[in-house]
Amino acid sequence: MDKGQALQAFWESFDIPAIDEQSSYDQATLDALGIGKRYITYEVSAGRLAETNLMLTGSLWYRETSWGPITRKAEEIAAFVGEDGWTQKIDGGYIHIMLPRGQVYRRALDPDTSYRRIIFNIEVMFLTSH
Image (tube, rainbow, N blue to C red; front, side, top):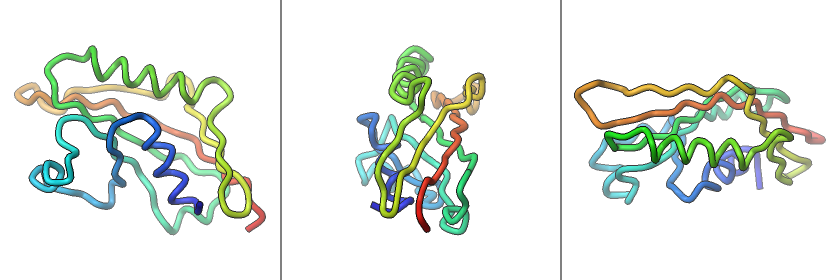
């Protein structure tokens, strides 16, 4: 598993579809892919994956009027990562992901829509031999 695949695997750990932000799909494409009402988008830049330490973001998206379900999923993600972070073996070493405490925030995108978004700032360390 390479670094990009490891980031994808991390975001796919939460039982909802995850797509990288560079894919930038319109709603019709998201619906065709079965992504629909709940999904995660995450930041990844191939050029930055050569760095050892990164600060990246991921967004949890729910098309709902209530904050309850998305907040519960955000709490699930935080619990999954835990205080010590998440570590996965990758080609040539490991990836380690932490959620800096106090760095998660949420907002409604538009008062007239039903989209809710929670943004995660994540700290990524690649512990590799290359």
